[in-house]
Image (cartoon, rainbow, N blue to C red):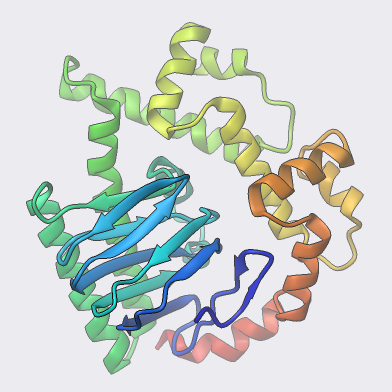
Length: 306
């Protein structure tokens, strides 16, 4: 069962390493729709495992790999018998790694790497998974640092292939394709840094060098969402962090997150997280995740980084 589940939000319980949890799951228990702030990697090794997102059913067979992105509402259905590795980690603890947040968003809510469709990438990722298992279970010196480096390499490998497939700039030269990708990564980074401000689509189009219509089409192809949806998602992420500040009122959080009214903030936050901002704050408070305790938690777990 999910240890901590309130209003559809799972609070991931990390044990050995701060921000990383790995376990060999062989339970036949299915999990109802829920979401969490962790990246979740599911790798079946015996029998299938089913992930449901937005009424779409993804069946992972042994050898396949599924990646569920933070904030994604999903359901998991287990067979009567089976085994799989499940890895969950808080990518925000990786620090200010350049373009990491953009990479995460470029993957969409779910990404699957099939054994029979992406053989080369699949084998590469399984190599990372086996090394992660070895580091995690043996807890050798500097294991924490090694685990995060392996996770970053895992994400980068998936992100690069995913971009190539999604962009489909097959008619462009390699240099031109890389130029396009670079432009849109810069724009995504700009949005992340300025999402609490009034961001003009016209300005973003001008930054890209494309017409407003062409920019909107390419941006959606790059991120799998519209500019408005992307900006809103970034603002929700800012709001999640601010809600852990006990001294800020909900109104303050709404304004500081870039929302122009409390009612709009409440409506969008509830639609995104399946709970109100107040409920979200209370859940974090009860589970000790307010910023007041974050320093204590980091000091408490710092030894786990090896």
